[in-house]
Length: 107
Image 1 (cartoon, rainbow, N blue to C red):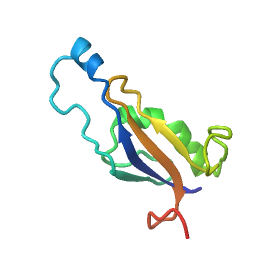
Image 2 (spheres, one colour):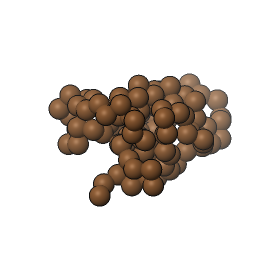
Image 3 (cartoon, helix red, strand yellow):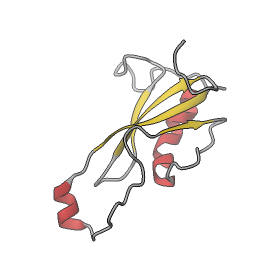
């Protein structure tokens, strides 16, 4: 079973939805672009929010089990996936990729 590197790569803020529907939450997402996490044995990494983990887990499981073409032919590397958390107002997008135990992804 592979370990999976999870990297926060982009966060969108739909300000119109924030303004129309949300109460002032200050800084609702504790994650930042560039944050990385390592999932070992398909376990949720410390520091990754539960909401994001629920969205990411099926893809982490597939990559950990050496799956490929997770998004059909969309990804240049068939062993990777781009997945967003389920926050409809401030979704964070993550790159999921297989990695070595030291966190590197390529030779």
